[in-house]
Length: 331
Image 1: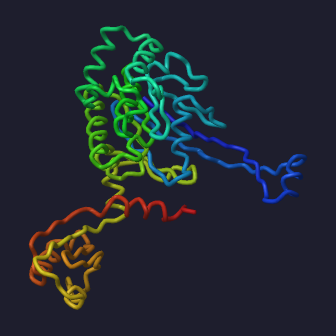
Image 2: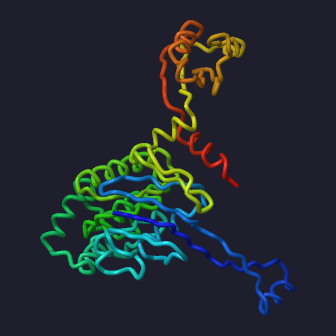
Image 3: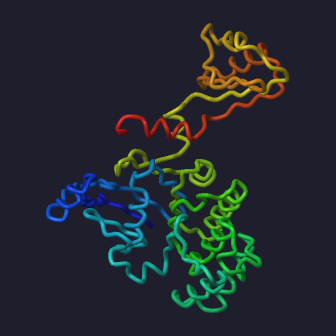
């Protein structure tokens, strides 16, 4: 469904020093430097996959999505989406894809969202019966209700994002590029969006690429992730495998019935070695434990601490990604 082959995007950026003298000099001679936003990135995505596209700010995620959707032309390399080259934005391709950017909107500010949906129906040539059926489905999945008839400016951010998604899906795209779709939303609305994206994928079989800085989005939606940094591909594969390779230890959290002193926590040991304490508060103790020592560590913790509850989890995905970004090859 999506193929990127050695995609590279280079910009020439003007450099300017502060001060009047530098400003005047820049009128006659402007220094420029070359910036590679995307540098020789290749990957392939199959039909129906949900793929997380991750990287720190400025890594080249949005630039890559724009090249795949035809908004930008690669400096070198090739892209193929649904068997077509996005270069030039062919109509046959645009009718089958959609790009949703959490920081930009297509809704008309002073008009109700239903007007934007009707406009998109006309643009994409969607029949009225198909349009009505799609709106009914989106209403069921997103709970649009009366939102479609209120002026866009009167909607909250979460309500607007619901309607943005609806507008982007009127033509039932087979490929959906989602660039930070939950940015700025509260935790409840983030959960609504995640549930909708999953259901849309499972119901229609659409292929989805998602960028997000909220790791809960990635963990809930994306079995596979692609990581880029400084424009270069760093990882492409199973999310669980990346977690295991980067931070193999388990996190054991003990909820306490009564507080314990620092000396007790410092004395926690497994096979004679002190446990790595991640956090110690009045209500809980959290330690990092090698996978092979989990059983022994749980026994030692229950023996030493007044436990009300105990959980064994994978390390937080934020910590894993921080290690990836700070590892070899990082700036």
